[in-house]
Image 1 (cartoon, one colour):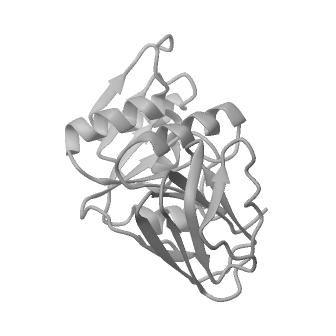
Image 2 (image 1 turned 180 degrees about the vertical axis):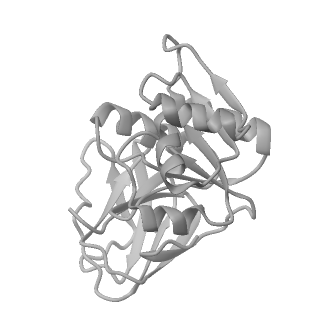
Image 3 (image 1 turned 45 degrees about the vertical axis):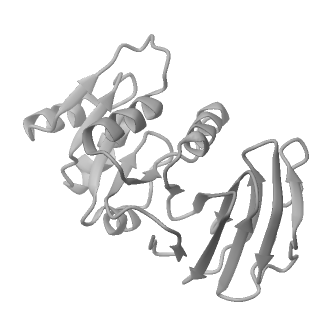
Length: 226
């Protein structure tokens, strides 16, 4: 998976779908680069940056309680398939989108942008929802990236721009046999726990790192700008 900041070498499906959600709006140039040659699944307010950039998505879903009506109208004028849900529902718009994309497009790698910033409860829900799904998912914009490493996996990353911080955040109660290479403070067969997430704000010493996990599921977080 290639972003402007880094390349993440991780087994992934050939089909990649970009989900554009309604949080912090990504930089337009960054968005155009990541949207190129990918299917796009807009979630509610995420339609607005597509409208601004004149990038026509493949699908739009949500309750549209926050999206600008002119952008929703633009989507309909472009004959984009639209699914509207009531505001009173059991799932978030992002959860609905992830489920529907799997039904419509089958196996794929997901990239979520527009998911950072805003309310903590929305980000909390999105991160744990993504961690629980058994397919490759990346949360990204020009300022932050999150991806997941599960037990038995090792992931290499090459940086084009060094992050300000790297944090390892357990998504399961325990992550065992966590090993890193080329971080300033290395981990070697370490155990990380969800109730005491202390492997935060690390630094990179070179333009390449690796993270492996023996058991559990770990979120790897990069911060490129405060």
